[in-house]
Length: 106
Image (cartoon, rainbow, N blue to C red; front, top):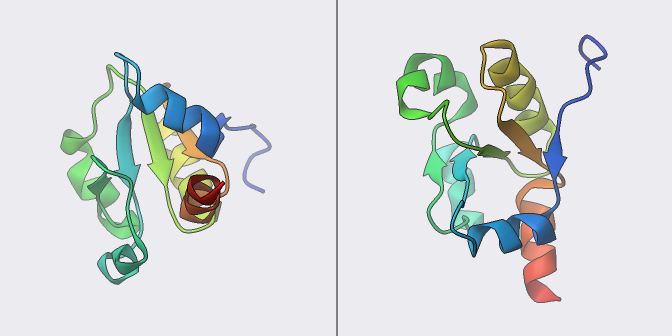
């Protein structure tokens, strides 16, 4: 997958803990608007994957960014793209919203 560079990822449980801390990350949800009906993480900003390039000014470079999609594939791709653009603090939500919703049920 990609150029062989391993991207950083965060688990849903670790993200939940981080969101309760003073240094909560910026949450970038790259799903399409119609996918948002399945739920969203409070405080996340929806920028569909194909709009990210045009809306980079909305994504902070000076704080942690967690990229979110449905199951983690698109967000892994976007995390890699952001890393290549200098967003060194961008990480993928492993398992995406499915993992987030699953851990919320536990």
